[in-house]
Length: 130
View (cartoon, one colour):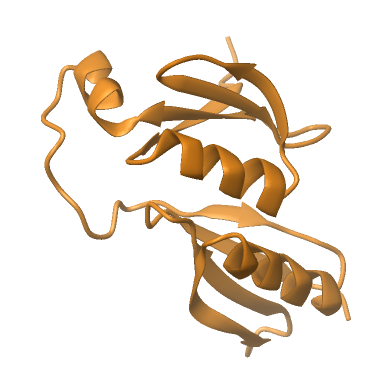
């Protein structure tokens, strides 16, 4: 059996706000919406993004809900151009996210920046194009 990611789940503090951030701000499609859980489409070839209320997600996994800081993970978008990188970060900020690292040329030749969603999840937006 090969490992295949079908969905990425994020525990969120404000499900309504997170849903708005990802659908209205970043253009994800709403595929399922329940009291404690939202399932979003990220586009062709991408896994789905599941948003789960923080406490309910911790309870589902059987772990404590306390804790914060760097979670040891980031999620990556790879658009084709620098303009798209800037636009995506700008859209995330307009939707309630924050810039973690402004987009800038990288020493390896690409161009990237980071934003955080309202719950602090890190998203890297990078291109290898012009």
